[in-house]
Length: 307
Length: 258
Image 1 (cartoon, one colour):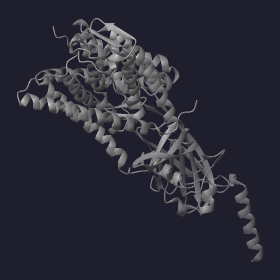
Image 2 (cartoon, rainbow over the protein chains, first blue to last red):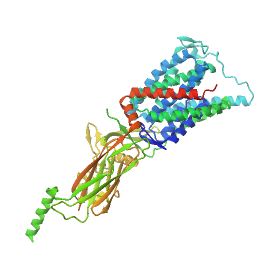
Image 3 (cartoon, rainbow over the protein chains, first blue to last red):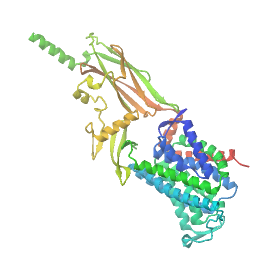
């Protein structure tokens, strides 16, 4: 069953897109992430232009993170004060990201920006996750105590000024790293079409010592707000959001996520992190490979919209 | 003998100067309006034509050639060229093709190079190689030589996507004076007005030309979405976000785990 995507301007098989939504939804449910870093490359792979893919996936992630955020809100595991601080900088980061996206698209370097961002972010984050989880797996294998560095051991970040107390998470940290993280997530999210949960959660844990109880729910609120504002800004400036594509992805995504969550609960945490790390690293390598090999055709065409 | 030759010359000149004295060309298109709906996968239109003798000159020539040029709505494109910089392939150079047809089909009954001489083909812009594709070069807008690498790459890519094509078998004769031509539109055919220019040739010279037109429109939901995205970007973005939130909320209600 072929349907015509009005903004991407091409016909796609509705079951293919729905299947991609379910598959990515499954993985996202399993790891508790949005899955944008998989969805955006998949859409590019089936022939949707990187610009439309990035802009449309933003609304898809807004849907899945809203669904997740509602669940965490019901359980009371969202630190609203921390979320507000993060997202105030997050929206600014998103706006900056959309601005850079628009500027580089005009000078034909948008694909380069998206590719480089994927390579740099995914290979480093993926490698760090693999390293960390292998150590955890080894520790568990040797029967040693599975002690992560506990909150309370202070690092340089806790020496920064403008300290604020977040009661829900029981942390006392400077506003500077909170804003920096929020801005960074909003910025890369708008450029890469990712929610960024796979980077955000480790950052909140390692840099801010946010406890595991509130870290997922709070990060989902930030993802929701940055992706919702990315959708609005991409639609208003570049007219690249394909609502029909996004809707099919959302439907597939929410269905897949339910089954993924059940599978994920059966697996051990460190194994799950290792698997996610490998996946993240592989996607980064795929982008690197694409940039290094000689393309089949050195020329490409872009339609210039006038007025 | 000399006088006869002179009269013959006069007749030739007269026929050249006065096209009314030539054949007439009547064409009809199967469908003037193509609607792109949600299940559009491309469409083939059929153009029928007859070559009719003129009332004053009922004699028909032995062999005719037909060249049909279909041009879609004009759009501006950028063609980028990649080059290896520090090990990775990036766009280093770009040219803008200004207001060129988004769809261009040259259909004929045999290769255009056999129908007329290169000078005539160039003058009448017949064939992909001869069609004017103006590029922005510095402050000027001009077509380049036909083997300019950007022009070649642009035509090749448009050809691969089915937007530009040249077919020497798309026009077939049903009788020596009745022909049909297949105009195929790709699934992602650009929206807008298409011009169809039909030229009749005999012995390497154009005798008469006529034209027709068709319109490709998006209809219903697709058109509505595309218009909204272009004309009301902010509202469209807000509506899409609202749709996302609604989908997320429905999912959380449907899959509630308690």
